[in-house]
Image (cartoon, rainbow, N blue to C red; front, side, top):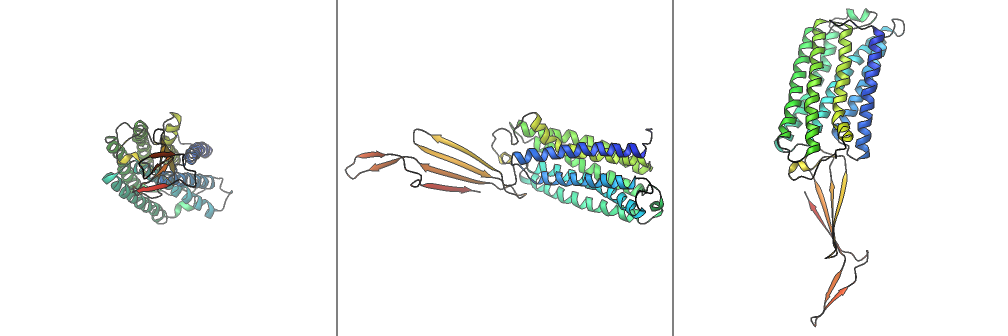
Length: 333
């Protein structure tokens, strides 16, 4: 059995782990902002980062010396830690689901949206369970370092929900991976999600065991580890793509999965023809919804004119000026 950590060791581990996770999330958001590729998975990763700050703040408060804060403040710090822990875990899982959603299409995409709704509902139940469990027995509030004994019911609920959701996070990337063709970068991202979720599940099972056995400070230590690992896993796919210099959207591909959802990201590609003097431009815009929409704007510009006279002669006129250019816009939905 591992030796129980002291409060200074627990605080030091929490500060170090949370700092690493926050830096990783900040770097992920920087990469996405620079590429103009933000979406809902980034928003939920940001919320998970805020939750780990709440968790760390709560730990600093309720593990402080007995005379450092009023007991009411220390009790509030414990609740901040406990529900901050859930916030990190479940926001991270929603972020991973959104990462898969932005690559999915068809029935799998609809199924994943229902998974997100189920995850949010589960988080709300577990959030409330902490309060009705701890407020039913209040003797823990008078301890120098207040810690509610969450007990068997919380441990079982956490273990079941963690295993079910993590199982979905393992199966869904495999299902999507089977439909990928010549999409190296997306395949690597899906494999990263699949493999890293297994690591999160292992720490989740260990933490549930700590709660079940009521192991005190070891429970806090593994809660911190689980949070840090969960937040690092969320950022793994984006940072790995940057590290291996993979494109954010992969190679050219056909099919519904070729489009990636973003918050109003524009991509402009031009094709020119010297022989005809005609240029085409296609502008694709990703919408800020969970729906699989795409708008394509195609502009055709004539750069030379042909004058056909009544006597049958043909005269080639010079290219039109910008003010004379005629454009045709085609919107495809």
